[in-house]
Each structure stands twice: as structure tokens, then as C-alpha cells.
Length: 188
Image (cartoon, rainbow, N blue to C red; front, side):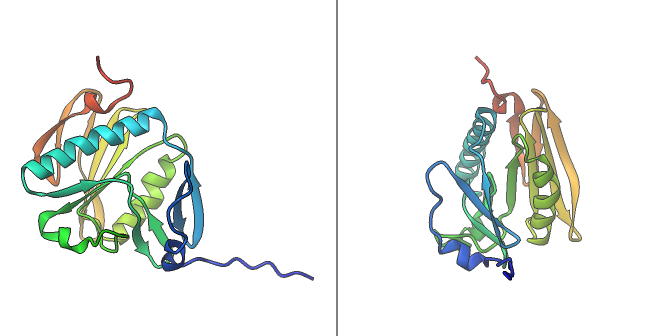
């Protein structure tokens, strides 16, 4: 007789695996390794364009740093990689160049085919529990963006936009984002 047992990896064990193999994106979710397919062109374009906008604005206004795709230890058994994230200038010192152990000021997820439930439910709850003050969800297919702010340990909708609207969302109220620049195919 064989007894099958599920072994949960801790975040620290998972991180010992090193970098992802080429062409594979891994996350640790509730102690299990999850593989994500490569992003679509629409996803990659939205991430790259929004990163340029946020990173440029944050740097030119000395607000902090915006980056993408780095491991964040969310719980003892969960390591997520937000598509984009921002750390304010006062909190940049929490970054040590490796895995991120502190919540960013903003996490952004861009919905891919098959990821909507995860981004809107699972990550929504994980990021809330990790106390990320601001969470944006960008949907290239629907051409929408939604902004949430953590208030009394719950996310509250604080902004949204669609199509080619121009939006200003917390924590960057002074930044105007032209949503039409984020959608695939690019405007000519």
C-alpha cells in the first residue's frame, strides 16, 4: 500500500529553486508551484507601456520606483509576482535587490486569458491580506482599468477608466494616463 502525501513548499524553500527556466513563469500559491504561460502581445504591451509611464513619472517627480515581475513573499506559502509594482521614495530602502518581503505601495495585475478569476479573486484577497495600499487591475481585452485602495483592511473602488479615456488614479493623482496608449495593437 502506498500513501500519497502532498508536501507544501514554504516561500523560503521555493526561493532556493533559483530563477525560472527560460520561457516559464513560476509562482508559489498555497505551497504549490504554479506555471503561467508566456504573456500575450496585448498583455506584454500593456505591462511595458504602463511601466514606462509609471517609472518615468515616479523618477521625474522623485516619488519612488516602479518595476515589474519580481518575487514578493506574500505569506509563508505564497510567492507572487505582480506585473508591476511601485515603492514610494520613503519605502525604497525596504528593497534589498532580492526577493521582496514587504508590501509595495501599489501592485498592478494585467489580466491575461485565463487569469481573470485569479487576478480579481485570489490575488485581490492575497494583496488585501498583504496590506498593499493600492491595487490596479488592467484588462486589455475589455480595455478597462480599475483602481482599489485599502481602507479599514478592505479594498474599496476608487477609480476606473475604459477605452481611450484619460485617468488619474491613486496613488498618482497628478499623473494622467491615456488608456489608449496601453492597448494592443498600438496606435499608429
